[in-house]
Image 1: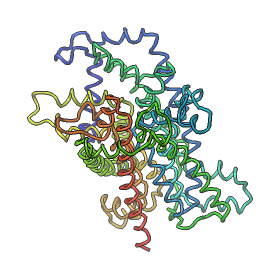
Image 2 (image 1 turned 45 degrees about the horizontal axis):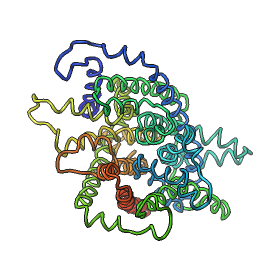
Image 3 (image 1 turned 60 degrees about the vertical axis):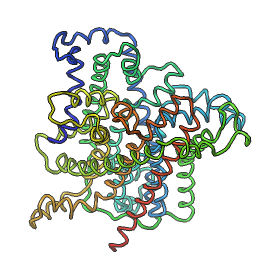
Image 4 (image 1 turned 90 degrees about the vertical axis):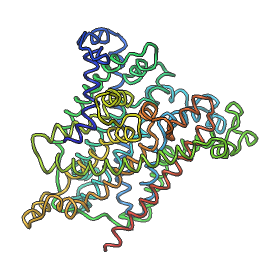
Length: 542
C-alpha cells in the first residue's frame, strides 16, 4: 500500500489539490474552489462528458463481442492457436495516433482503399461509429487475453457435462461458459472503459475531423492553448476521476453477481479440440480479425513509410525504402530512441507484473479493510489523462525541499510508466485469481506453507499464463507511450514515441511511419521470442 501511495496517490493528490487551489503552484491556498463554477457553466462540458461515456460504453460492447468470440475459438485450438496470441498483441505496439493516421490513409477520399478498389470508407471513418470501431480494434486484446486465460482455467469439463445432458451449444455458451468467465470479462471491460475515456490520440485525430468533443480533448486545449490553464485541466481531470469511480462501483457490483470459482484448475489443451473443419473455420475467422485489426494498419504504415511524396499515390515510381535507410544513416538518435524504449518497457513490465501479483493476493485472498481502496487506487491511473498525470508527477517531484528527486532523470520516466501501466496486470491477474479454487491455498496453509510459498508453489503456476500475457501488454504499451514521454523525458533522452511525434510535427510522415514500423517489428520480435520460450516451459515439465 505504501508503494502504491508513492507511485499513484501522490501525483493524483497533487492534481486534486491543484484543481481545488488554483494558486497552489505559488504555494498559496487563496481562491479555493473558485475554478469550478466557470467550468461547470460551460455548455461544451456536458456534451463532452456524454460523448466520452457513450464512446467508452460502445467500445466496451464491440470489444467484448470481438474478444469473447476470438477467445472461444483460440482456446479450442490449443497450441495451434499460439500465433494468434502474438498477432493480437500488435495493436498495442502501434501508437494510437499512428494507428488512427494509418486508418485515415486507408479510408479517406483518394486513400489507399479507393486507389486500389475504387471506393472509400470516409463516411464510416469520419463518424462517431468510426471512432468506436478504430478504438475497439485497438483495445479488444485486453478482453481477449483475460477471457482466454479464464477459459483455460475453467476448462471443458462443465461444458462437456452440459452437452452430455442434451444442452444446445447456445444454451451451454450463455448458461455455462460465459457465467464461469463473467468476472474476467467484467474486470477487463472496466479497463477498456477507462482506457477509452482517457485515450487522447484517436479521439483527437478523428474526433477533431468530425467536430466531436471529448473530455480528454477538452483537457488538451487547456494544456496547449495559450494561456495554459493547469488548474482548469485539473478540474476537468476530476470529472474523469468521477466517471472512473462510477465505473469502478458498477464493476464491483457486477463482479459480485457474476463471480464464480472452480473446484479444479484445468490444464491448457495442447491439441485442438475441434475437428479438421472446425479448426480450419476457426483459423479463417481469427485470420480475418487479424487482417483487419493488424494487417491493414501495418500495410498502411508500410505504404506511407515507402512513399516519397504523400500526394504521389500508390504507384511503384513513388515507392522506395529510402525512409528506412535514412532512419539509421542520417537520423543519429533513432537507434538510441529504440534502445531507450525497449529498456524502459522491459523494466516497467517486470516491476508492474511483480506488483500486480502481490496486489492481486492482497485484493482477493488476503482481504483486509485496505483491499478495496488498494484495488481502486491501482486502477485509478487509467482514469487520468497521461498528460495530467505527468503534470502531477512534476508538481510532486519538482520541489526544492526533496533531498533527492527523480525529476529530470531516467527514474521519473520509470515512475510515470509504472503508474500508468499498473492497472493492466492488476486487473488481469486479479480477475484470474478469483477463478482459482480456494481449496489449493487452504491445503497449502494447513500443511505449513508460508504466504510466499503459496504464491510461488501453489497459485504461481496457475497465474503464469496471465502474468506473462499482462507483462507482454505492459511491454507493448510502454514501448510506444507518448504523452508522459513528451513531458518528462530528461535532456539527452528520446523514446520511439517522441521521435515519431517530432517527425510528424516536422512533416516527415514517411520517416515517422518507418520508425513506427521498425519499432513494431523489434518489439513484436521480442514478444514472439518470449512467448515461444514460455510455451516450451510446460512441455519440459511434463
